[in-house]
Amino acid sequence: MKISIITLFPTVFEAILNTSILKRAQSKGKISFELINLRQFGEGKHLVVDDRPYGGGVGMVLKADALTLALKSIIDPDKVMKKTKNLKLKIILTSAAGKPYKQTTAQKFSKLDHLIIICGHYEGIDQRFIDKYMDEEISIGDYVLTGGEIPAMIIADSVTRLIPGVLEKPEAIVNESFTENLLEGPQYTRPEEFEGLTVPNVLLSGNHAEIEKWRKEKSIEKTKKNRPDLIIQTD
Image 1 (cartoon, rainbow, N blue to C red):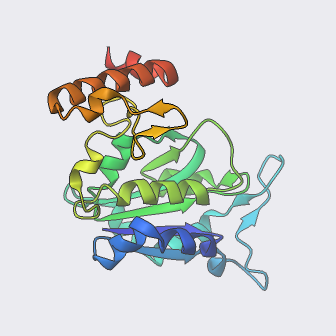
Image 2: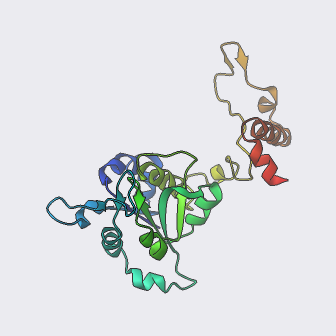
């Protein structure tokens, strides 16, 4: 799989993409990352990629022409417009106004051959570029960030770990939070006693059926406490 990221700040990705699981995934040949600096497609001496919004307002808007040139450096957008059912490609925009990002979305993206992420910035981007080229607008939460770089990192990380062969133990992703609209329950490791607190006896019993039952109960309990909205979704 390939993930291409169009951003004004490509250097901020370097540490994240070359650490831990993301680094190992690249070493295994499971994924490749491509960073495209939007600024190099700007106009004039100062490589301008934004302008004031029509109709007035606070802030600046990223220009459709600069974004299109950046996109054309990766793919032929005209061919993409004539998508076939077998084309495993998506072009997304990180945006506070987008659809909420969920584990199911990450799973869907992990099955692609190519994911292109446009990092939103400033007041937004020209709507004409969104209308013509974007498959989806994605938000990571109900709050506003300075730019779309952090959301792009989150998407890249969450998608990469779901690609078959990336994690050494594939079962690690089976019972994670949000997999079945439930949060993952509590986990314990050595020492068996810590500051007067002990590991639940069931986890020391060796009875796998009882352990699974306990974990499911605790998972439901934690979800009801922290994310009751997820329980409602399963009804």
